[in-house]
Length: 342
Image 1 (cartoon, rainbow, N blue to C red):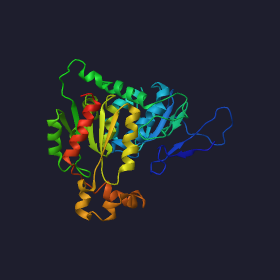
Image 2: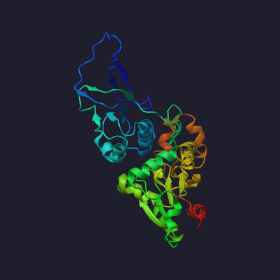
Image 3: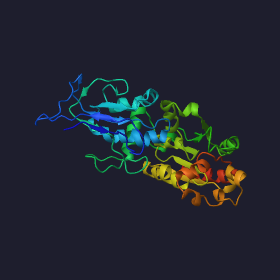
């Protein structure tokens, strides 16, 4: 049984540090003598790589949810062995990691000792869809509702259903969280959008990076909000903390329809979150100012996207800002209020 190299990340197209696994079968004769154990553990290991950090969508979709799916059957009796260790990431998700494992994390970047385990899972079980728990290869059933329950328990979130927010206060203002992006896909008339929401009776919370980067704090904010509004982007991953019955309003920029639907729209329904989609017109995109109404980038985004993601990305994901039609924005917020029973 020869040593083997594994890349412990769900997306095999991403470059990650390889890990050497030395199998050892005590019931047969080995032609290769394994190195002596520096540390012998009595619980198995789950070996995984961080690979992509700094984008909450990829962190949840390709690490956190697969980690939950892979680990939940071990009932916290396992060691996490992390390749491409990132201290800031581990600190950010320490609460989740500590609820999935009772043991110290092993950092392969610094710990060069030989660790011996009674067994190991190399890599994580990846779900079949975005922000989902649908892996049919596992011995136990798993759904995104199970994961959301786990998050509520982990972060001590008290609100499961939107009805709990108004239970003892019928005059309470509905809370609207509005994502304020610092770079691409910014709302150029953000201040006016806040005024519209305020006039409709919402208490508006602007979700700026200094708030959203603190997962403990922001999860509690989201768990007590009625409506979340944002342009398509990683921040909408925080829909996992919304109570059931809340409303997600996703603003869909030009050329971003498929990603908007599959990354956040479809998952919202699976989570019990009501979903509204605001598709902007060309007049609401900053691309109109640059290229005019007849350029294919504005008039026919599909023709650009068919050439590949890397062709469309500089325009639609990285080079586009938004100035919403305030009348249309008001209409969709009124629709959100109706879904809330207001």
